[in-house]
Image (tube, rainbow, N blue to C red; front, side):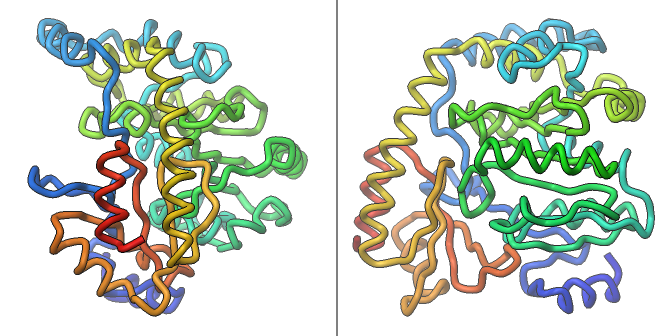
Length: 348
């Protein structure tokens, strides 16, 4: 990204210290095996049999994958409750987000974006020459979608963690459709809840990621779901062989792991409540329906808290990279014993 673009980001409220020369914002995650990583919101467990499926996929990787991805589309459609023909496989959820914005937003058009929320929405809009119009994440469903090419909603919202009320979200989707505004709903973390997906609803494009719920971010499994003209655009723009054979096989396997999903949801809900109760004795914590918690560090300060955790071999997510957050960190919900270690280090 050129210097003028970086300056524009700073003027819009972004911090230059958290923006790379290409305009990218760091998203957390550590590849250091000696660090206990609370900065990435991925499941610390994977479904039983995953390694065997991955190894078996080696033989299929010797040929190009079936570009129709029938098994994966069927499994994804059953999980979110849509028609398999409406599923557009992608290399991760972010690829689905880019494809959706790329096929909808033209230069000079405005896009409603929640804040604080996932930083890539604004980046992808700007890459198309569009203009992000930021709205408080807790106010976006009350915003007027008219005169915007697209509106974006993240549920549960990243980094704050709250799910939107299902009825209110559907009503907003209907308002968007009435005025010809495409609604992009990022459901990357919705699988951790039993909330219904908007997949298959007219006028809505849903972006989904399997990598969070099933603990496999390096595999890059995702997809978009759309109907009518939006589906035609996505299907046309999608790259051939947009998902590897291994990713398709793993995705199909993971979406059949019903017991694993149920256990994950129960564990995350219990641990999240326990962690929030403890953290709230010292910090101001957002309510959350997601596998993470975001809180204001208050008088302690972000730098001191990050340093304390780092000295103990723990990585936290510096949430100051999110618009409108200037004193927050985000922590994942991991295994009980790992969560205990974090709470001890944070002295709560």
